[in-house]
Image (cartoon, rainbow, N blue to C red):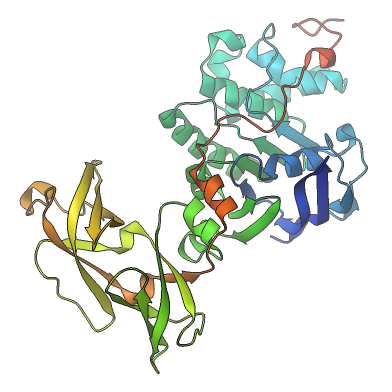
Length: 403
């Protein structure tokens, strides 16, 4: 997959607010590329500029070698699937899907052939004669996707497309989107604040924060090797330890004296820090092992004694919050790889051992107070733009397609 879509030094402001700040990145042909970040980070603004609904203050958008920065939306071959579906309520599923081809005045036999192809793709043949009020949220979303795909866009834009669905339906629709993408093979640009959606669906993810892109990479790269504390905290859960380097070893490892705790941690020194340098260390909850008995460890392991403060059983795993010293809590996720009832149960207030491999800690820059406020803000299920009135775009034909 080669370079297909390029954003060059894009900046967009609204009054004194910088929504997108000199952003540059590329999207490969045929990939699912997600823009991920909290509400207000600029991700939907980028999508709207690609769609042609907004114009950048500066910069260029290059699609398949063509500068489309100033091109009108109807000439871009870019279609958008909105969070609220934007289906015409008085039309059937069949007519909603056919809408774009009718407006383009395509021949009747071509319209029928293409609509039937789309109905088969989204597995909605038996619902073709129903109206939006008669189908489920997932079926509405599939209909909206088919209506966009039937115009054969070069890029399909998806703006928080699953936000209005419940958890199980979101999970199923995420899989269906992936299957549809594999079938049609076009480039998807996906905007979401939901880390789970982005991680499960994307080939690559751009994590946005305050109008800039903090990191671009595969889901595994942004999760396992975050480039900033904001990325580490926004993508999944993590534990942070602050301290200073107190010893550097020849084997590329170092010892960290943790601030406010009488402990030292062994860590891989990938940043090549020196004695006295400050450290902000991230360790994911699933990297820890927790046990009632002293663990068998190697020379590159850390072990701490702790007290269990909270426990949440989640079926496939259990979440523990343990306390080290005074008021220092660590989050631990323990996968149930064996039948749990055969194991010794860890209970509230138990004294436990927490261990982890020193290679599993990741050194980062500390995030700012502004980043911390964004991370603590509750997620919002609404897009960053106002509702669009589609009534003005209704075709001059009735639902049967007659003049």
